Length: 105
Image 1: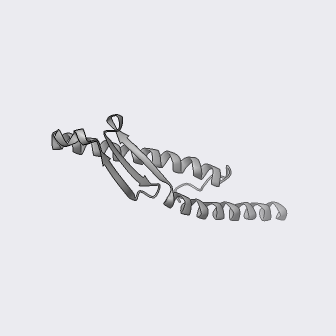
Image 2 (image 1 turned 30 degrees about the vertical axis):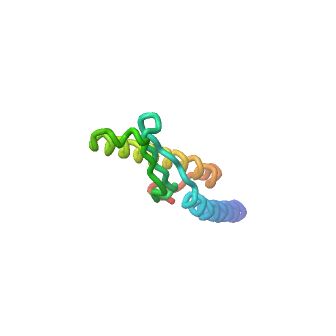
Image 3 (image 1 turned 135 degrees about the vertical axis):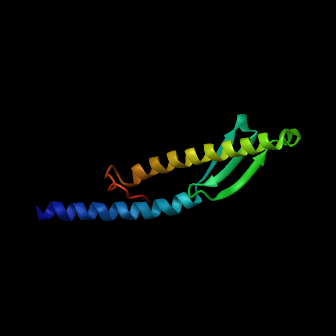
């Protein structure tokens, strides 16, 4: 019984170290979201830090409301990709060991 507890604690420690490394990696990893076939693009880190916004020049002739909607959709798309990427990487970092309910990284 004692050996199992020791092994479990070692595994938990490895998971904690993996999560710390992952947090550093995610802070630097950039993801791009877009809307309407790339008319509006947003680049963010996986920590939701905006790194850039690019708009197709043709949008400069459009209604401002449409441009705002396209930027909004690009941000939303980027956030969805960030969530997906973060979940995938977290699953690898925890090596199948589930996180307690309510625990986030």
